[in-house]
Image (cartoon, rainbow, N blue to C red; front, side, top):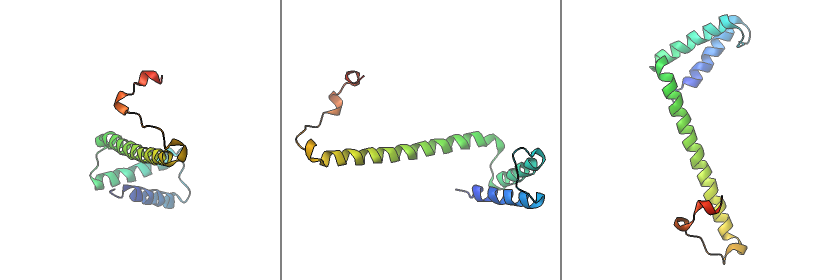
Length: 105
């Protein structure tokens, strides 16, 4: 949301221009240059190195929540489609509170 990804891509391009070739992970010296650029970006955005694990955890949680929301939406749509089918018109809907999961295990 802060535009960090775009800044990091710019930093990568800057480092690749300096070394005049694509940056490889195995190139420790030039990876150090890139990491120094990333540190500058983090400092500019007010992100401390200690906060990165917490930020990453919050991001993963946010992604998981959005995936669950999308999955729920798809499931509800699938159930609604099934209810509209002719073969299920006369079936009675079960009461969810009376169902016992042990019967299905």
